[in-house]
Length: 393
Image (tube, helix red, strand yellow):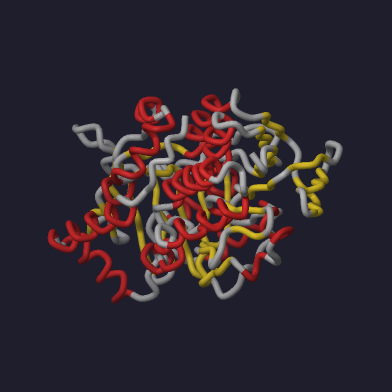
């Protein structure tokens, strides 16, 4: 093989998935992760349609993923007096299988520890590309040489910044933000588990703001619109203050939710973004997962990460390690499946800008025909019958 030594940045979802395919098919793989260990918990992610389930089956992890899946959760959209205005079914929110991101990362790591060397608590700080590979500098360990570098390090990808350019050139934000927090808010008087075992979450929407409580996606989820990003992405206190300001004066159970979020040990806030890229490779660098095709809360990211990892590995194996041929094929094959990530707008759907738009969203879920159509569309977007069979081990 022309390229055999590969460095992957990121050990969440796309990175371990790619390591699994490459490591078992003749490549020497190292995965570097800036966090000191795998991050537990987090919001729920989901898989939907034949393609996603087939990938989990090919990876040999479908049964374990099923064993750790969350219960189906219906979202009841309510007014300030807890009157239900619409129900968003768990099948729309959680697809065929829903699982906490941390649980999925743990499954992938356990399944791939024999396929790659994992390095936690370190990160790439510089990359010098030469005709025959990269000289990669790390924050802690000594510099090393690799044939290829793959960025699987999320929407704020350091690899993309080093190899392609500034984040602002490739990541688009339309003014919506979201926060997830582990602090639970009592839902006194509300039904949270149905006799069937399905869970129930409750969402309260005012123009440009949504607070969702009790769900499997996260104990508390906030989505809101703001004129500017008035916070420091590396300072949790400033993020909590930004969230508090955004929901100032909101009714329902929102004040209690904001108070719980202010001390929640697991808290995360970021902009709702989508990645706009015409190609996911450059030179000896490739991007996979959210680094290449993110659409925050859009519902397809985890499945696309697995698909991208499979296609990238498959093309590298098929090309005998010829990265130029493999990367060109990867760019070509992933262009259509990732279209949904470049066009979806989760912010306007979750936190519509006006009372009228909120009413239209809720009506959509009260209309059986519209609901069936949307369920069919999400499955169709996620299913790719043209996915090649690379015969990987």
